[in-house]
Image 1: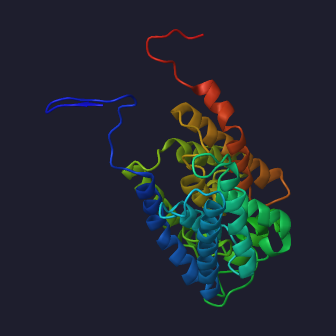
Image 2 (image 1 turned 60 degrees about the horizontal axis):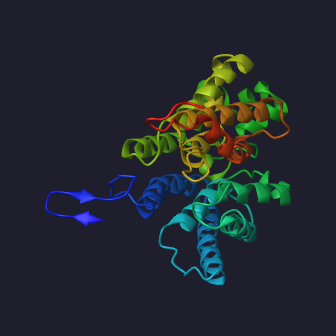
Image 3 (image 1 turned 120 degrees about the horizontal axis):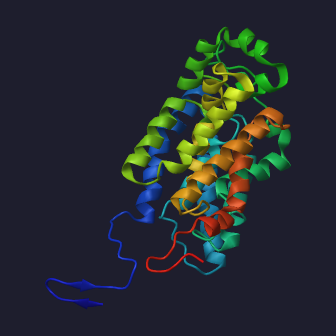
Length: 322
């Protein structure tokens, strides 16, 4: 590198920013803390223990893997902390703590470090951990208990479960009216995973990340727009808000599907990725055996990310398209 008072010559890419991986990770963590706090508020102290155990297990698993592979023991970049936090937000609030710890260990050891560590993993580690727990402990991962803080609001079944198994009439029996249900979904006092609470906090956090340049709008907007369009054809206009606010869609669209490592880097590729996630999410919700499809839709699109990038890569300036 050649330096003088007026000129700095370096090799490409010529990118200058103070936004580091560590800053991005801790910014996302900070944004998710109010969401985690809302989960503890609505679901109680056990939900807080699930979050704490998941984070500690992820950090310990990261340290152990790095030590075994002799790559140092620094885990201060926040990636393991974020993985544990995201996984905990995908878990039922009453899941046994040892299962949460096992899921975090799998997410780090298999979902991340087995592929080479941060930047090399194919699948989103937190969602890989959730999928592992879902396949191993399906009963515990789909058991929703009635909680006491809002006995008139939180039922033993999630809104998506009620719609899937008993239809719209069951939703109306429990929540009275769709506007009343929309309000509860928006604020968060409904049954579900810890991070399914408070869509408003997830929206605020996601918009903040877009404004700060941590993520771009392409995946969240294309993902949510696809879900909205399909919702019209499967249940009418009244179904749109329900499908957007229910389940883990907001958490997945803003915080899972936007993972920089496992999603396309091209703008057109990100839009294709978001559309694909929306299609698979609604396919599972409407026709599949599970009431929720966010986790598996993102994991499936993670698998085809290299293919998407191959067909959406931009032409090098000065060359002709082959």
